[in-house]
Image 1 (cartoon, rainbow, N blue to C red):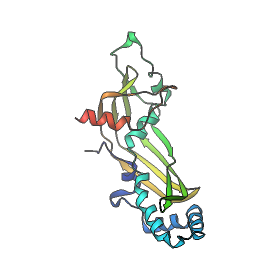
Image 2: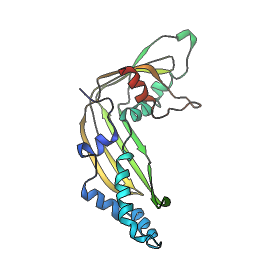
Image 3: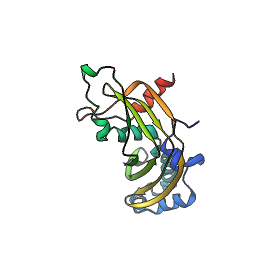
Image 4: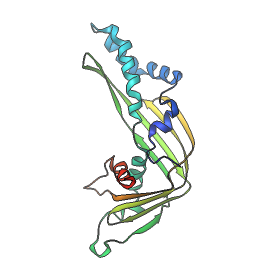
Length: 212
């Protein structure tokens, strides 16, 4: 059975949950990383770079600690086909509508940052860009009362990349990704509106409730 708690780490890092030696080398040689090292070189604690580099490697998995379900729901909720159900109507209370989404592709970009510190003092920030593209065979949502109540999907395929200030650190072809065939959300996932945007974490929270 597919894992409903799949994260970006599962897609990008695999079972090892870490970058390869070649990818780490590209990261260390990237201009922003090199700039951070040069900035440290002008300090009294210049010899601390090995410790800083270990700090970078330790933080890398956290960049990918994002539930895939959060990304999917945040993206789908913006589709016009879904967003038109964001407003509640007393006359339609309790009504559920099943949507076969016309758009079955998804592109998502995330920009996490890693702050480098020495003696608890910040010395530099590494700005990453994570790009994700997925295509689905089937995609169906059940909506009502301004919320998403059920997700039905088949597997998907996709590609992704990680860049540091425009320099590509890694690229991945995910092949077939098995998603849960059907997920019911106990309390529903609010469909965002202009004044109430979607917040990451809503999806997994509802999922845990549904799973008991």
